[in-house]
Amino acid sequence: MAQHIAVIQGHPDPAGGHLCNALEDAYRTGAESAGREVETIDVAQLEFPLIRNKKDFEDGERPDVITAAQATIHRSEHLLIVYPLWLGTMPALLKAFLEQVFRYDFAFQPVGNGRFESRLKGRSARVVVTMGMPALAYRWYFRAHSLKSLERNILKFAGIKPVRENLFGLVENVSDARRQAWLQQMQRLGAAGR
Image (cartoon, rainbow, N blue to C red; front, side, top):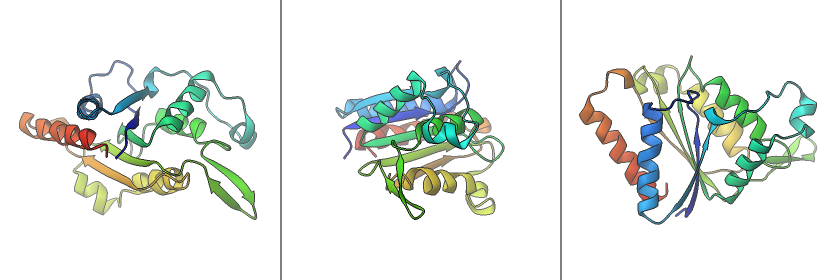
């Protein structure tokens, strides 16, 4: 079980107060009550440029906030990534953050012949996505394409596995009882370090 957890809060609203924030808080409460160390990277609070070309991705300068985020992830044994589904995928700010963080020599390294060495092996992850549509519709009708892309093309490519997920749908009309059940579920997952 993971003792050090890095939380990536991907909701782009710096004001907070969203379900994503409450789910993160519940997870943190459970994890810390079980003696686990939790560090949060709140993407909405960070200032960093977009990567606009291959040269920047491969060897461009990394802002201090990105270097600090990489250090947090490197210390972790488990990642929790929380974000709302916007236009069928993660918010643009979170994608820009992941592009900055998961770069050469940190997440993976080319080794020739089109092959890459994964640099983040030994870590697991949980991805938590909130959405206005029913979670079942996202999973089955839309085939959870953006979630699968995050899992396969970013996390697993960097060596992070297993990757588990929680989808919370119809969040704008959820009852208080259902919301509390979700928060309790996240608290249990945090306590288990999963």
